Image (cartoon, rainbow, N blue to C red):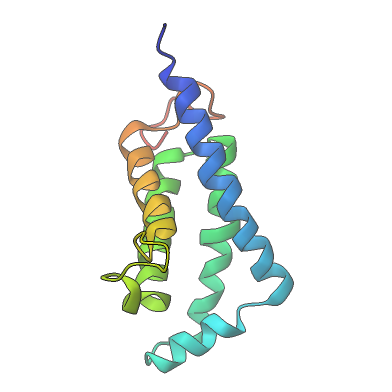
Amino acid sequence: MKKNQDLGLLILRLTLGGLMLFHGIAKIIYGVGGIQGMLSAKGLPGFFAYGVYIGEVIIPILLIIGFRTRIAAVIFAFNMLVAMLLAHSGDIFSLSKHGGWAVELIALFLFGAIALFFTGGGKYALSTTNKWD
């Protein structure tokens, strides 16, 4: 069977971007008050919570269309790292009730983004000629 790495990268971009976009839409509908509370509890400014719109709405759209995929992937990975440390830091070294890693979904997003940083978006991306593609 012939390999098609570009199709695989397209599927990865669509999956990461599409699934994260649902989280972003929820933040648009319900707001970021909960995130502001978590930030304030950690002594950080509450307005940082609005960064979630970049990490969960704008960046996933960039991944889906394949525009500046590598830079979008770095921002996406940073967003996942912040989410893991801010909202799920107590779960990093624990298992879920079904035996999986308690933060495995976040880890899949994080490491998927890291993979896209190293590979780029592939030939089925909107932009393909810049060093950040």
